[in-house]
Image 1 (tube, rainbow, N blue to C red):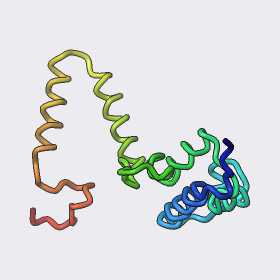
Image 2: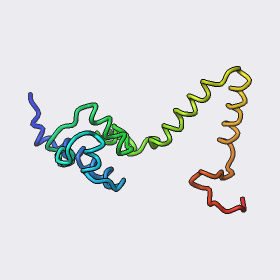
Image 3: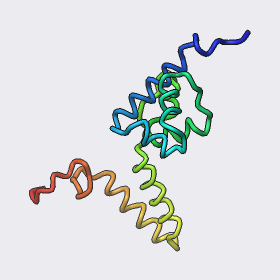
Image 4: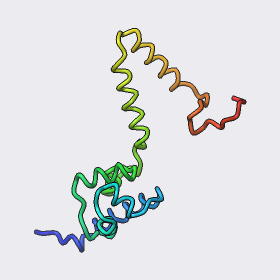
Length: 136
């Protein structure tokens, strides 16, 4: 049995989620197209559900829109956002730096420092909660 994609409705639902995420970020179809290497018309077709994304395009689009692939696909229980891309990049940098530390003592010191920061509720400059005033 062949499923009629046009009548299925799933592509239109995926397209609506793409559009929603794009608008939330305030970027145009032209900008999304440029970043993905396709025309704005192609992005428009994805958003309308008239064209189907390849797996790779779906991964690239989810990363660009800072959403989970599962959310774009409408998986039950899938939150819109996973860790933001910036957060994943910081995690990657942290792991790279830890891997470069020589000696167990240095790695343990780094681990204890990170654990102490994680346990602390004191705002630190660069945090979203940091207000910038000097009264902490």
